[in-house]
Image 1 (tube, rainbow, N blue to C red):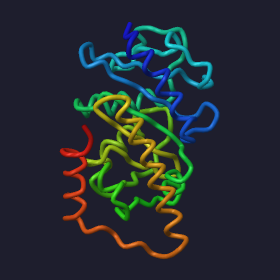
Image 2: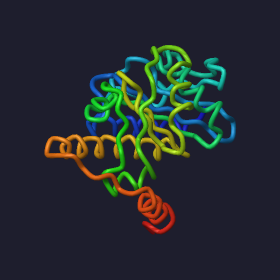
Image 3: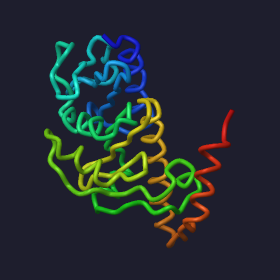
Image 4: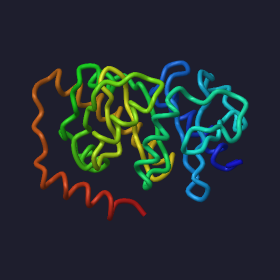
Length: 213
């Protein structure tokens, strides 16, 4: 089932260690098939370089395993909570990338100091509250705090990103870490100025509607 999606997930998971977003087996990506509504997600505790398409676990939106011999990610319930509450989302990524998680550790959102953040996120990257792993609690924090952003920090935990595809969510995860690292460096030098909201909106509109081919 979902063979194309599972094959894509293998490649997308390799982007996480490649971009220094995870350590060892932490983190995960899921993708929802818009036609069937089924979700494919990384199995729990499997080393990224060993992942194969047949290892991906297919579940329905209630968490019932439809296909797969391995246990799904311990974050599965939260991924599914996000999908149930955001029909526009077809990809979810969770990482513990260092710089972004440093902001999460102290419960701080990331203000818009950079045009790259205005482009990609259209506003601050918010920080949600603390929730324990293994239930829908983290997904609830994501839904309640992410707003119009494709990314949210989870206090004392890490990063969740969403997108209309798994690839889009991975891109946001990469961009969150790049922005968090640059902002952290800037804060060591001084206090950056926030970009005014009107300019943030203009930058985001240009990037969304004009940038690229």
